[in-house]
Image 1 (cartoon, one colour):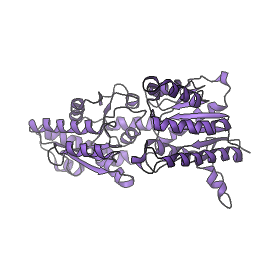
Image 2 (cartoon, helix red, strand yellow):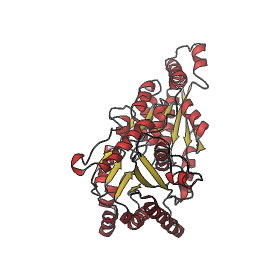
Image 3 (cartoon, rainbow, N blue to C red):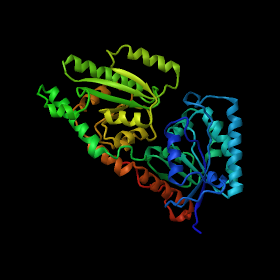
Image 4 (cartoon, rainbow, N blue to C red):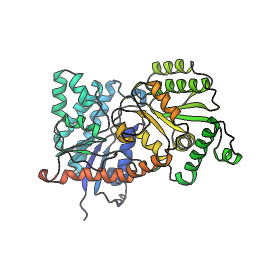
Length: 432
């Protein structure tokens, strides 16, 4: 019989929907799904054939009801978490799962308490611990923002993992702070959301860019080109898609768009801009601040469309001309991979892992919190055409197939003798 590595996946899947929960779902699907569910069926479902040699047992450790509930304190969460821990221990004893896969929290007190409890209850039952670091900033938080007893408790519960997986070289510091035996870099990946890029999306992007170039230089636009450019080719359509927070760069994006539009208006340009904001607000206060800021913008320059998915999301990514994501800190930035799949020019920040995802010399990188630089980059991409290059980068580095191959290779390090594997082995880097 084929020997498979068994993995207890203690992590939640959507809802609520965000990058971490989405990647956990993709990993489970790619590695053959939750084996517990198949065993519970009568008759049991056959084990799907996958090339990765892994068998996942999933404890869906969901604690929050929605995005606003994430990070909030509710006493009921401890009861729910305790039940999840009992489920994990039962899987260990019932199915002989020796390896615990866990996604550590970001550097926040309410979140780190969760990690302490899970590790205290579950870790003694498992021979190996895999920490998959989706959030960034834990190392700095431990070093600068907590007292010694918090630091000591974190080292005691999360320290010396068998394997730590990070999303980028930038994330190594978070993992290495807790002294794991091995570290592997595995960039994220997604199923290709735009397989029709060459035939449908690329010609549209090129036609729209050429129309803008002709309009800006006061040249006539052929009727055929106008037809190929879709609706409103004189409007440079911008897109922001993430949680609607200051940390994700929403307010910098809005200010940058307002500045850029002011410059176009002052120059008498026939081209205008419009920003569509896709995502949900995490707080009412920021939602009110956003509305107040948008009230200073002319006309319908900025529009909030809420959370989108499925066909609506695909259509917006296809019809937009640029993706604006000036986030303040990212361990990866999964939305950038989605934008690249559609060949969308991107304006983002030179912080965290974002320069690795985009490459250090990418022209759309700006300083954090600098809306003037955002405006400069938006205007720069009015006529530039990096569409095919960005699509190629997605295909080389960020497909689901590439991600699963790298992740499976990293997990195979668990079975390698300590002396035969580099303790900081880099598994098919996502960028560069």
